[in-house]
Image 1 (cartoon, rainbow, N blue to C red):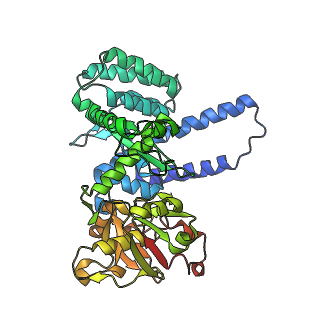
Image 2 (tube, one colour):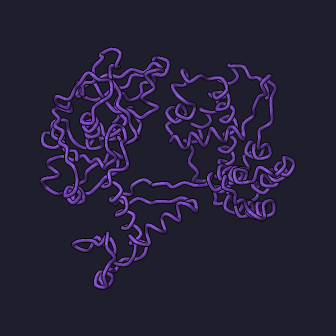
Image 3 (cartoon, rainbow, N blue to C red):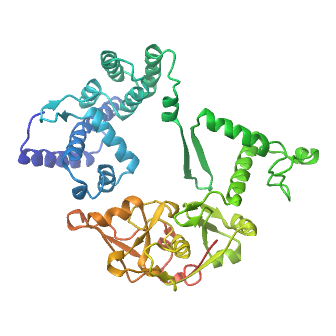
Length: 461
């Protein structure tokens, strides 16, 4: 790992841009099928090799750059600057730690932790899919396996990665794992490490996928809950009065045409409804734990369209109307995006103000952030120290990390349209957007003057 001059680095990057531009302008009509395949193979190798300087740059940023310089954590800075997801940025940071060259505390160069894999990647023979398989292998390898065996396994996997596809390498890795850990790892610590439930993004039809691994304790609790609530005839939404508390009679069982999976779904929903109704979930952000939904009066009157929860979920208006039969109601009135007459002199926002912010902002207002209202905090636009008041027209929503950006030189202000603008410190200002449109896609579809009926009056329930 030698030292390069700034001039040399600039020259190489300019040459890279120039060659990439020439390559993009080429036509491949004169190539035969074998030549096109060889060209694709060549491009793939070059793309893989570019990960090596990327790892070096990421590791140097992690070692030398401060949060103030980056405008936050390294992962957040990479996501914003490269316009990639935070999950992708996190993956690149983690891979750089495993595959990038490092330095000791005294500045001496150190080989990558996965040195054989890094060498294959530098040659363009190992791609991202192979790296994922190899890193996953070591993430699951018991800590009791000695260093020599680990190094031998890594070298073997890296060698096979030069010949196998990632899916083929994954099968081979499972065989190696079976040899090194024949009994498997069944400790409480390992189960705790693997536990997790993921609620996927909403699909276009509004449905969402759930995936994950549950511990024996949670499985036992789920089994006990579904034994009652997912039994044939129980909690059937097609019944005029679904059976929840009592045991279903023979007629209710006979009418039930649902699959076991559908009964499980409806049983979960009934259990959560009962938990909400119990009032024993306490508070979240100053409000009783409940479903907060915002919609327009126009959509409510038409009984059509979709409402938005404070968690960012789109819900059909028909469901909202059905919920209203057993829900507490709130009404927030807006005028040109500004809420009316909700202010006080305490630093913490009142429950009513939070409801208004849930309805108005819908989530974090920093540009590019998709955190919904449930996961956001109340942010004083001009700063509490400056006003010593908590007026609704000087409040907005910001997720935890973005709320703390004020400590790193960021400022916020309200523009003429009532939107919150985020102003970065000068050294981080690249002309990026000042307002966040993520939570308000309808504004991109309508003119400013077309929101008379829908946007000035908003109901939250």
